[in-house]
Image 1 (cartoon, rainbow, N blue to C red):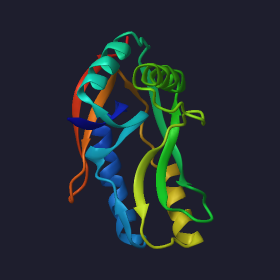
Image 2 (image 1 turned 90 degrees about the vertical axis):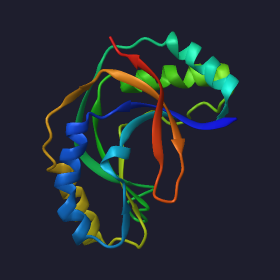
Image 3 (image 1 turned 45 degrees about the vertical axis):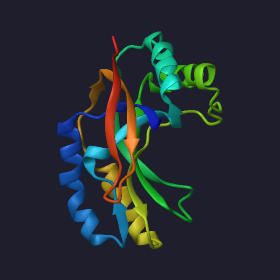
Length: 184
């Protein structure tokens, strides 16, 4: 049996609810997009794809050896993938001191145990907010970026790293924690 897995830092529920509340007016004013449910948002450190049960066990053992301090996170600003001139994904950005180093160590553990490809780009904080269905104009893009810049949430500290299983359903992905590690 395989599971679709990824490793992430969870975002506290009160922050997710605040993002959702503050995003609601924006959702109604921008063109068609699939807005990501707040409960489905997290800070992905490494996407692993489909992993066999034995591989999952070996990965968990490897990740048991990955130690890190809690990660301070501050949301500010946003952007688009793949680029602003042709956006397909709108994301919320910010700073997460120590997360890039943690992502590198998770990447090494995944490569050593599962032989996954190593990440080519450095880790950067991004939390997907919307998958853009129809092209957004420059005005629409500016509205999203202004919202992201003025979101004004206080920083929080990520104190856990989680191995999640992702079950893809017609209503959207459902994430289940498979293993949790305390950052200390």
